[in-house]
Image (tube, rainbow, N blue to C red):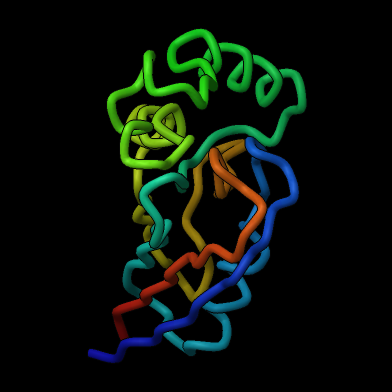
Length: 140
């Protein structure tokens, strides 16, 4: 069995944003030379997410609105106890928990083995600094 590891570094200027990283993951699979296996893609920060869904702008707007309703941004220490530590990102931790940390995708014949419309996204919930995404590929 072979393995391959890559890191993507992003710096998202907005507090919350979704970035399609499918092409970058597919490129890593190609570089790895692995024909049959699995790829793990995960956000290496506790205020960011990786998830799979449709690349449709209305859906992304819906996600932003829904997440803001569930865990509204509020830098004060009154809403989120976490903000009592001097941070202002209590909401981002909750948003990440809802959207998830990672995805695993099958690799078949050297390509991502997706269902219709599936794409891989990085979800940022506390932007404005460098964040890393791990791509770990294993297989043969």
